[in-house]
Length: 440
Image 1 (tube, rainbow, N blue to C red):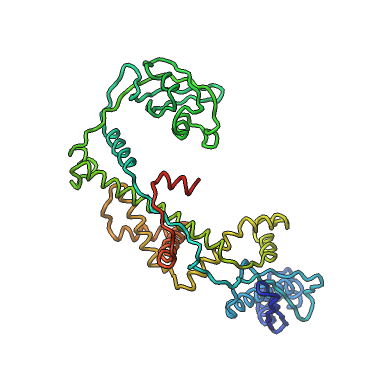
Image 2 (spheres, rainbow, N blue to C red):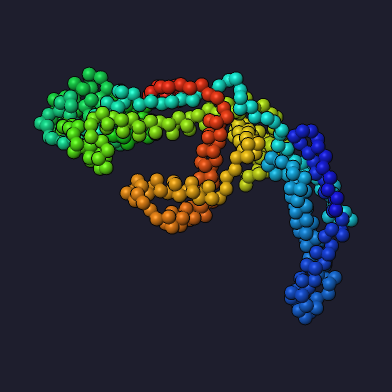
């Protein structure tokens, strides 16, 4: 057997494999002998069928199978030993004059090569790192929400501006018949408020859905309408009032603080706000980190220039799936996936050049941390180590779950690396302004 490689250019190569009978004949003969021992042919005792008959019936198919096995093994071994970094899988070249009755065979495979490039982490163009702060207004609002959640409900005879209203919303054309509760203060505008204030149990009120609530998501939750429909929903609904209550906010006293923090760590309203601020900004930091990783990804893809073997990849995509693609479909698929492929290559380069690795023990520890957090949410604050090990082992046996956790852990490692090795523009802003700026 002879294997040679010819580089067509920096991104494309062809591997040629020449195979002669000596490379596969011994294995073919052995298999034919095994077939002869097991063959059950009328007129012959088992194991005594003439070899010529066995060769005539099975020889060619066995030879083709063995050549294909030898071909695949040799190609994979060559790529590994020569340390050839490829994209996709090798593509066999079609030979119109190929003949399985020839004395020797020549096969050619096209390879798409991973491009060589450098990743510049010291670019003059800086990525923005956001520090999201809990504003005074947010803290005041959250304190009010807590007081409302732990407050006492009392019935009202008629709707006031401070009332909670429960009733059934109906629109026959859209087949809406849904019970919901809302605060009068959630309503948008004086016109809607005027229609509701003063109503009593049993009253039927006609409302228009467009600009009914300050937040369309409130309308979606009440009516049960699909998310994509809610913003353009402009219909009339009737509201039959069924219950009217008012919430008396809970006092900011030790009784409330102990309900929220049984460990006694909060004794004043000021300490409560400090706790809320701490918890909120921890959550904001997680969102800020996710946004930073996304922004670095975009930055590196935009500013790391290299070519891809586009023609090869389109040919590979045309045959890689269960259903063959037309050239036009393969091109569209390549264009759709090109950005993700570029970042995969950049990510791999960053990890290889900076020795960022992930071993199984780290993945187990990460899985156990994830499980511990989940169990804490259900009140199990001190699970036994053996229990965590058992659950982590079961999760990591699921390939999909293991890959998901591995991806999350790699993202954490990369983010930590980027924070240490890149300089960012720092910007401090409220959560509301962060949402507006980042997600437009």
